[in-house]
Amino acid sequence: MANVALLGSQWGDEGKGKVVDWLTEHFDIVARYQGGNNAGHTVIIDGHKSVLHLVPSGILRPNKMCLIGNGVVIDPAALFEEVDGLQSAGVQIEDRLLISKRAHLILPYHRGIELGSEERRGSDKIGTTSRGIGPCYEDKAARSGIRVVDCLDTDVLARKVRANLAVVNKMLEYLYERPAFDPDEIIESYTAFGNRLRHFATDTSLYLHQSMAAGKSVLFEGAQGTHLDIDHGTYPFVTSSNATAGGICNGLGVGPTCIDAVLAVAKAYTTRVGEGPMPSQIEGEMAELLQNTGKEFGATTGRPRRCGWFDAVVVRYAVRVNGLDAIILTKLDVLDGIDTLRICVGYEIDGKRVDEMPAETWMVERAEPIYEEVPGWSQQIENVDQWEELPAETRQYVERISELIGCPVGMVSTGAERRAILQVPATPIEGWLS
Ligand code: IMP
Image (spheres, protein in one colour):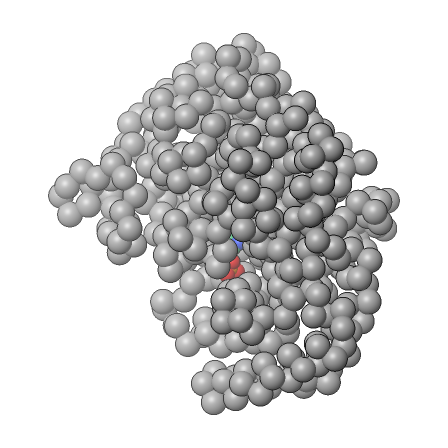
């Protein structure tokens, strides 16, 4: 049984929710390894839209187990809002959702710190989702974080909350001029969350090991994207976790030898939400067309996403740092009716051609895209589910992307619906689906 990873190759929002939902059919367990409720995974089934932020998208398929690993940061208020929403929509959660006892919790003061910090940065702000993600990971690295397991014991919780607030409240007051937090209120509400978390909390690493030993297959679900990764992204305009394949091992407590294949989702064009460079960004009519046809508004914050042409430099980098076996290209139907398509094949920076993503983020900001033009197609391809039925130009576009990024495109998504997806012949995808 193959264990497969699925992650984002660009700046997130590549359409992972839909692809995870589709792939889940072939796996027993879906496990998330990083990020938090900054993510927004949209799945549309028979016209009904579900947006998941923390719970793995696999929850929408009956009988599949879903895990939230130790690398995920959990805002319990957001988690239980999502759980309650899913339950009232008829989705069974009990006995299907497991949460790592080692996962760190987002506390209300994390959001307070983040708002203060973003305000202080002024025009250099990151443009975060304001969910407290960064400060929670900061506490984790500073060894003052509060984990799920701490929340199950009121004495431990109270001691840690009081110790943290003794520092945080001073910082909020003097540095950020923001309101302080009452420790008693937090202890009370997080004790209540602890009582609910108790039913889901376990050693998810042990669960995964035992399940894999018993022949169960696992889909590792990434959130955000490679270029938002804290180590490999366009730092500092990144999130605070490892969204790349490397994050799977420490975010779930599995060894690299457990991962049989790594797949990534790439949008057929490029989008980015929040601040930070995006060399192939475009303005004007074409940008508006992509934004409106592709419904490019954040699933978590509703912010409009910046849009641009497919950037092969960006995705080729993702192929390398994740060791990708195949790409799943999404939202290809959004490009219907565009006469000529452009693909960014390299950058010109200060008069020099650059073919790899520079570490100097300020150079990425100055990068002028070098485009290759390819013919578009006039037909509508929405919901086409056979490779051979795609127009020749569409197939050429996919094949050219595959050549430029140095990785096979194994599947193509042609619409928002669960069924609008097709496999590209002679690519290795099938071998990894049980
Ligand atoms: P944070 O993760 O809220 O700290 O935000 C850091 C950066 O990551 C910002 O540019 C956000 O817009 C971006 N970001 C975080 N989560 C997502 C996501 O799920 N999709 C796209 N961008 C995201």
